[in-house]
Length: 179
Image 1 (tube, rainbow, N blue to C red):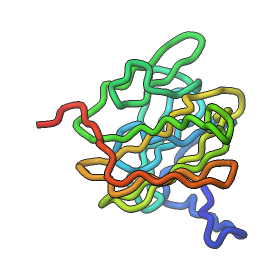
Image 2: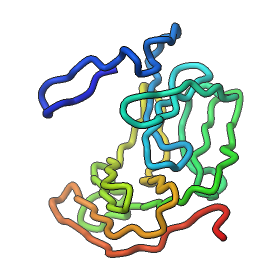
Image 3: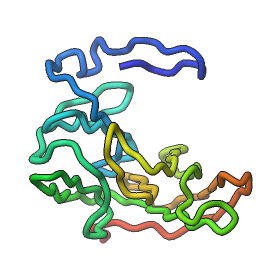
Image 4: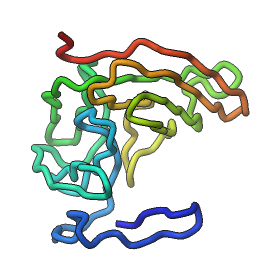
């Protein structure tokens, strides 16, 4: 596991990260916030998700699906995994989320290449809209942000491939079990 320190150099932070105790290897590592806590988890090869605990510390969580495309299949706000032999439907929790679907008019219609940034009490989160995820899969083109208990996103900014910038102040957010 390497941390990008300044945009041009990487520091090995494997020791104590949780990755130092793994014995499996692979090429299908992708990052998504599977538990909507605002921290990007790493879907590893095989049946593991490395749950992000913060501070470059991860814990392995065994799941019933290998690597594959990721997206919110049942529109409940939690990311699911598809592969040729199984679909893993995420049972979710009480955390909030925001999904941003980019629809380009000057840029391409799917917004591929756009960078979506949100700001909430958790801080700033960034997602890039890409047409490929990992080595061979295409996941959802919707930018998905976990917000933990945050009930307000102060701003969403989309930097389009054309150079245009769109900003939305205080968009509505959602949760699975709001009280």
